[in-house]
Image (cartoon, rainbow over all chains, first blue to last red):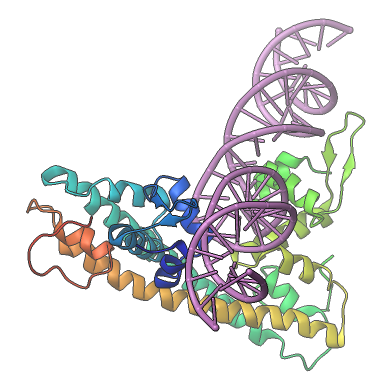
Length: 141
Length: 141
DNA sequence: TCTTGAACCTCTAGTCACTAGAGGAATTAC
DNA sequence: GTAATTCCTCTAGTGACTAGAGGTTCAAGA
């Protein structure tokens, strides 16, 4: 039997977060010692690892709950798991492509002013959405 | 003078969000009509566009506040703007690389089960963090 | 001028996924 | 036996909004 601290160390999930998952119903309420402290078994540990991994993949807790409820499912129900994976993948690809265009823009912004000249123009204007700094150094406001 | 709805339509920032920014001090309190409705000028519109653009780039509101306070700054102060840009860029690149590895993993997960066979193994185990499904179909729990 | 419907007002509370802290009790190591 | 560590519950805070209730004001047409 493991303490909550042990679970936390072995999953990188913080203690309040473990209790939070219990509150949300993602982890079953564990046994308690005579002194009311939580004691977990291997099943709980694996379940927490599963949750953690799903979170790392970007799944919201409701999706994880859905996946957990599929334990032992078969046939058509499994399509739900598959759909969740597909949906997450599409979402992720979209996020990546948007982040990449932001990267290009930030990179441009960062280069726009190397700190050597002392006017407000380049970086702030770039943040403001202008594609370049031309003309007199009008300030933002 | 523009109404809050006009500002919203022209910046894609929702009305409650504009009021929220005002609360947070990112937008100055605008003039009001005799009937207590907000009326904005061009300065406010530009400032909101600036905020919106920064948010699109992923900057937290506190950083945006910092940038806004640099209006009219010169010399060394501008390094702050530059630092914010650099920091955001590094952060973004990190996020992109992590998302890319997640994409690879989700892609594998999604392919692991095409819904044709009726056991719980592939997708759920993949979500659980196992790199493949081997051996008997032991369930997650 | 009146009326009607759209747009506006404030305020509270909800979202998501945690995280921090207070104040106190249990467990573990020596 | 005692001291250090870990644990308990509970409340409230975070960031960046978003939604809804219940009421007021504005603008355009008859």
